[in-house]
Amino acid sequence: RTMASAPSAAAAAGNAATSSSTNYPILKLIPLSQAQCAAALSLNTTNDNATTATTNDDTKTNDERHIPPEVSQKNRPTLWLKLCSESDDIVDVDESIDNPPEPTRYARMDKEGNYSCEVKLGRSEFAKIRWTKISRSLCDIGMTRTSNNDASGGSDNVTAWIKMRKGVDQHWVHLDGTLIVKPVNQPFHVKDGSILSLYGATGIAYRVKIEPNGAVINSPESVASRKRGATDTTTTSSNDNGDAKRPKHPGVRQGAQVLIENSTECPLCYEIFCKTVAVHPCGHNFCEECAETHLASINCTNDDGNASGKPTECPCCRGQIEGFTRNRLVDTMIWAVALNGCFDRDDAINYLKRREDAKMDAPS
Image (cartoon, rainbow, N blue to C red; front, side, top):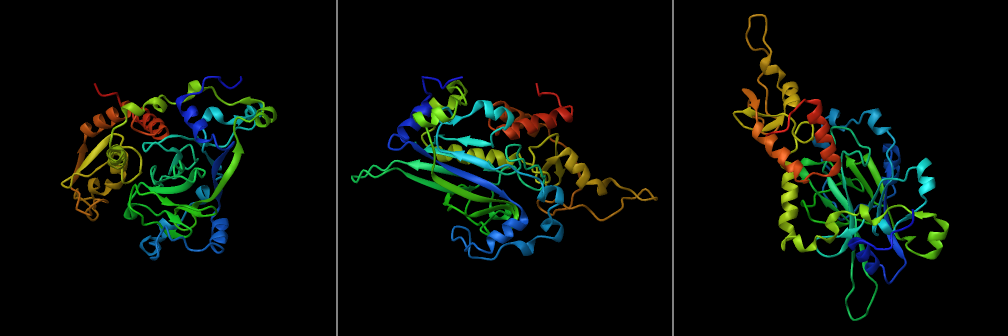
């Protein structure tokens, strides 16, 4: 299969953005073990983009600090971000049959009109992170190319950045060994060689590798040495040419997306709510399975038929829980949100599988 002759809107934008150069930048997230991370941190300097305050290690219990061996020793793939469109990336299709390529994200025009690629970090099939103590939406990391329109006619600027999806009281993400305390949705610069850890200073860590001139696109040499283009432009998302439909205030849409993700996530398992239950009197929501496990003591009785054990506290507000009941309205609203494509692909697939396992019928 050869590369398509009619590029998509994203490909055209990529070609325009790279007209001054035949190279496109690459950002790699190279997984590190806890030992490798600790050794690397001993050589790194403190990153000013995080915080000069102490980390919140002291607020974690011994159980929370511990990462099970099956998690810490599990092989994770290197994650690739390529600042080019998917149709411009040249790969050897025959070789990829026996050696599948590493997980890759490609670029597209962002809401501000810049050429950008990013990946959401957290629990996902894409990153092969399945530990339930890791939220599905911790932070984004990406690269953005901005045009240099000044009179000097200099080359475009490419910056690498991180943007938090959780507030400092809801995550344990560290950069270069220091807890990140940046506000939600505010990008900040990340440099080549930085160490990004998703659980404590050394847990589930990646080394950030930035290659400003990482690879060549659409050159005769690359096409000759690599056999065929990986994809057709028909695989490009339909959102590539949807600029006219984007709202005039992209920050509102972005804030709404973060609100959806945070409001539909169970605070116990960090999954999208499935068979939602509301505890009373406080009204906080949980998955039914999580609530039954966490609230089991309120239904336990002793030999005299009286309730045993101390009252169960709500993990959100620490208020006393007197019982819980199904919240079908939340289930219906989440189903509608899923049908509108508001969840990431990994989240949506996992949500549909959990619904199937729970034998939930589609709301009518």
